[in-house]
Amino acid sequence: MNLLRIDASARPDRSDRVPRGSHTRRLTQRFVQRWLQYRPNDLVSDRDVGQSPPHPVTEKWIGAAFTKPELREPWMNDVLAESDALVDELIAADLIVAGVPMYNFGMPAQFKAYVDNVVRVGRTFGFDRARPDDPYSQLLAGNGKRLIMLSSRGDYGYDPGGRISHINHVEGSVRDVFGFLGVTDFHSIAIEYDEFGDERLKASIAAAERAVDDLVDRLAKEAEPLEAA
Image 1 (cartoon, rainbow, N blue to C red):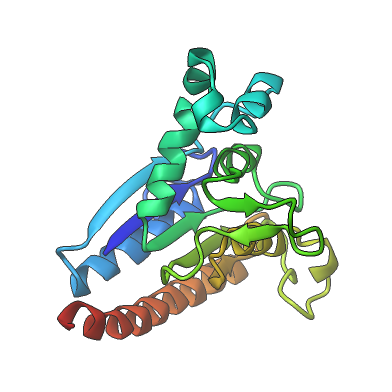
Image 2 (cartoon, rainbow, N blue to C red):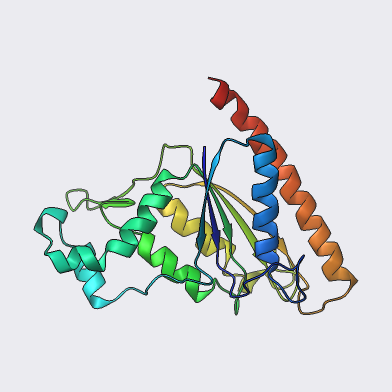
């Protein structure tokens, strides 16, 4: 299997290594390390959009992306080269492990730039004007792809039914955009209380790490028969 790890935190190091480090990098590292204990021959690709964010969409990008490949001028292919590389990476992945912290109630700008680069007509979704009632198709569907989103939050109570769940625009937006492409097997785990830095943060980290371990144990065991077949 191919694993794609995407880290979107602006913090370059992990919270288990340095004070005020990234909780999401901590969780993505834990997930991948535990996964490889079960499946050491699986391939892992790393994409650090937190430290090397993709270029944002521009007018030239839009013009190039919505021009049929056979009609593109050379400059259009140059404009889309970064996006093509990101899309190729996503298409090749069986399991996407994304560390996406909450910034001001939504995803970081770095990750939004990534999303805008991989949502590509003709590559990750289709659009057919001959079907006016349902023109879109999910080009990544049917391949068994899974998305694991590992997040962190400064406050607490963002989960469904929580005190401020109505202003959590991270999980829903990430789930929906990847679902639009056909990646509908979605799992999420988050650390809370980061701004408090007290025992509640420690407890939340411990609970998230247990949840990551349990999720890896279950998914890796589910994958074993597929490899044997």
